[in-house]
Length: 171
Image 1 (cartoon, helix red, strand yellow):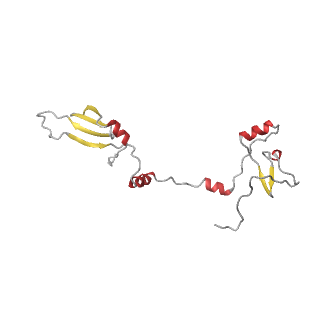
Image 2 (cartoon, rainbow, N blue to C red):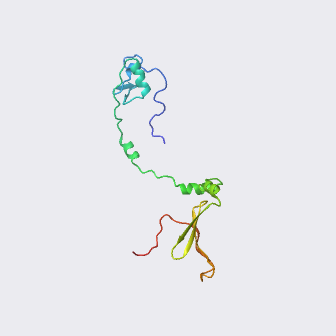
Image 3 (cartoon, helix red, strand yellow):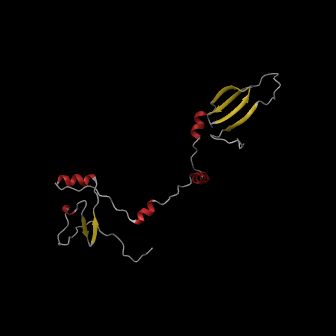
């Protein structure tokens, strides 16, 4: 947008004249003091460590750092909520374009066909299989001959278990 205010570089790398028609020197810049350059007053609030060492070497003491005053614009923009990008949408779009990352691929390749097997009992003996490749669980009933039970001993098919689950029952 054109606001009508002349813009561009305020100052280029050059020698700058003071009001008394002499060039500015290193001694004109001190923390806590005001410098006037081409009619603009600039208040120096702090300097970096290299600059402090330089001034200490020439015997000029720089003052303590001062708080930089914030203007109303900075206060409003710094406190404004900035939404974070939707990572699910980004992953979806990357996969649509043929790229993307598969976080479980490394886990799958390292742990393929590796299964943890737990024996447990709750009146009836069960076997719990924990598949390391995809963190899924399967619960099987131990089949014994002539037990009178169903010939299909799968109590829970292989699936991922939620960390929190709700039965949606009162109490």
